[in-house]
Length: 349
Image (cartoon, rainbow, N blue to C red; front, side, top):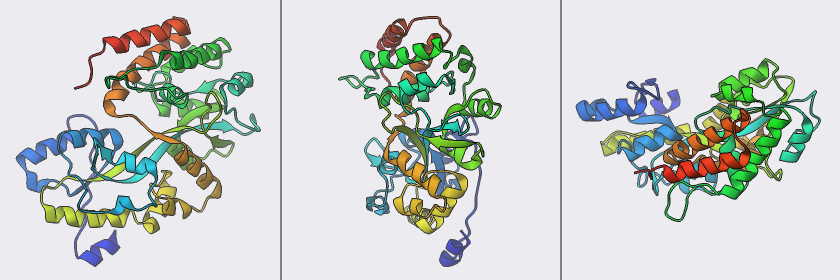
């Protein structure tokens, strides 16, 4: 950063804001743009969900016309998708995070990569079954070629694909490999702590959590799927422009281009445990094992759906997952309840 300041004879001022609540990023930008537009920051860093909300509220400016950076072939597909909202490019990605499976090496020579292999392993799989977004169940559904929208563009689930997922959960519950107590975990942090506490030897979590901690007795792979094919849901962060003054946005883009240069982004992303958005940044990683799993995640990645879909479908999947693991309903009944719930849900505006 000092190099950029010296080169452009400017001073970079850093501010830290929360993401949620009244003092969160979106509310802060909304208020400042109305009452003190000159006090708006030039560049903000946001995770995908906040970034999407801010863009749809008109709080961000497209980067199209200010840079052709994302046109370069070095950028991964997930990164281009991450930066795009309703056809417009509203940010420059700088970090990604993919879903992975962590396992104890003393228990597994090879981790279970298929549903059948997992059921034969006789070991519980830790994941936040009570998570509002139901990301793990969503990943299982999507990895099995499930669709999220009907012909009218309304959130919808394929009942046959969902039945496969819920039947898998039902079998795992009967074998006590997806016990009812998983439903008390609502966050990945809670599931991670359960893994560290020794409640099981298998865990679904996010890549950054493993990469920044790397327990000595553990290794990492991609999550189990029906057929064992590589799959990962991926999330991420973008730099975005918020200042209405074009000259400020031009300088801000120059600063962002400096921050995503592979010489800076490669070492930084490895140090903080996030997936880089470009191949050249990843190839600079010094840990070959971590680089290999990162490549597999990136090439098997599907970007998390938009906020409206996650809110509606995530709530329905969570409800179905919890009711199965608590042995309140059969898999088939849970499917019907989820399908009926989605049919009764108004389309997002």
